[in-house]
Length: 438
Image 1: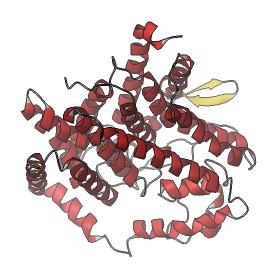
Image 2 (image 1 turned 30 degrees about the vertical axis):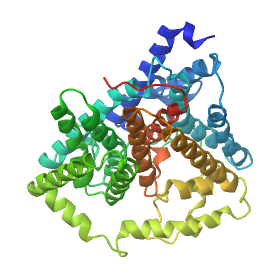
Image 3 (image 1 turned 45 degrees about the vertical axis):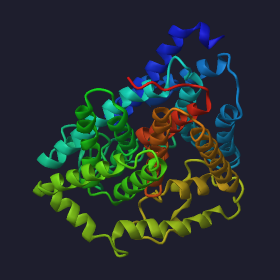
């Protein structure tokens, strides 16, 4: 099968994958867990059939198409196999395989498919344009919630446990959960930390659009303002760190070309901060969060107390305890104040424990090597607009990657997909393509 000869099918595949990415950002799909179909003796959430299963199908289409296979295209699909030894040599391998499939279907496969399907006729910019608009709408929704202290999507679930399924009976198990652990904005994800994490990567794209947009620049400004406002004024310290890293990296990457533009960007940032300060409810929440930023804060102590759980690797140093099995092994080693919280709130620590040194090295070498190759390619691009676009993607990806130091991002569908899709779009610069701003 030649992709160039199947353009309508390829275009439909890209549109469908982009639409699924938009759905993950716009809706808290995990709240649809109670709606299930029984198939082959398993009670399966209905949304899996419409938002999870299509992605492997799209990936198979892309993989079966004729490709000029580069080193990075091959490594993209090989490095996740480092997780498999830990899955199959540890107890409950079926559960581990199911969790690994979720990681692939909602993240790695989605980003890899965008990487494979992109071409000179379907650029990374065209793919990200629609998702950017959804992210802006999600930011407006968070600001609405902060101002009115009401979230019409998830408020009805606050304080209520979503019905659980016994793990021994069902591979689509989920433990009882409540949304009372997160303060506003709950946003489109039901938790402020993943909600802010999915907004951050789009901020550099907005700044890029402000600089290179040929028409309606005031619309570009109107779009990026809610992204920054939601990220800065949400009382999420992880979001502040992520926002700072995003803006600093983007400034460093684009300083030579944007010496005049960057000061204007920071004036805009200052104006947005002052705008938020005028809203009492937003100001109060932010000041409370800032005041609790000390080593006695319960949430900080929880993350610090999770680092000793790396001792669970004893006897499993190479392969790890098995993907998805952190909740079964952490408790004897945990030293924090929330012993019943089965997450270290650090994706990289959890990846190390669950996949071992081999899996951790595979992830680190793949990400580090790909980013290095991408940066070398960006520096050779002659068109400043194209180079600026990829620099914005790189800064945005670095922002969400930074927030994963504070929560388990691969276990949140929207965050998992955004992380890998941004990386897949970023990798398209390794192809001889041109980005044309529309």
